[in-house]
Structures are given as structure tokens and as C-alpha cells.
Length: 92
Image (cartoon, rainbow, N blue to C red; front, side):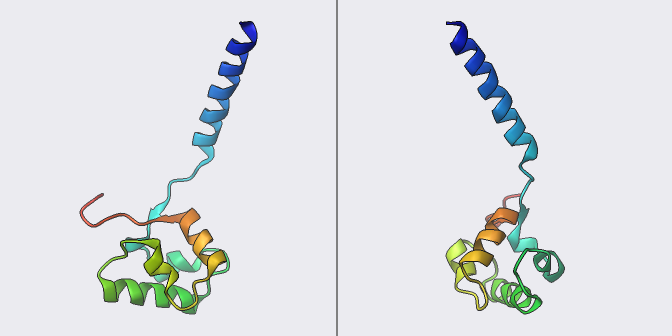
């Protein structure tokens, strides 16, 4: 019984630590070229292509749209997903 209590305490501490370390992701639909340029392995040309694609669509609604942008491959997409979120229009 005591083992279960200790385990529960450790798990709650671990969950709290993970929450504290996870940075908030920014909205990809509001990102500037400069903000995108800070993403690891993303070139300035790809950052401009992402913004141009977003502008032509009005806003991204899925990661598939981002993935189909020239210059975005699996590694860049994963890095974008770690840094940004796609927030639907009208949601703050």
C-alpha cells in the first residue's frame, strides 16, 4: 500500500515537471518570416515560402498544407510542429 502512495507521488511530480518544461507553442498562422527563420533546419527561403502559402490560403487549417509547401520535409515539419500550433481562425 505504501508503495502505491510513493509511486503516485512520484508520478504527480513527474507530470508537474513535464508541464513546467513544455514551452507554449505559437500560432503558425500569425508567425512572421523572422519567427519561422528561428526554427532549426528551416531556411529563410522556406520561411518565405511558408508565409506565401499561408497568405494564398488565408490561413493554414492542417499540417498537410504546411507539409506540401516547397522546402518543408519531414524534419522541418517536425521542428515546426514542436514550435508552432495551427490555431483555427476565430480562436485566440
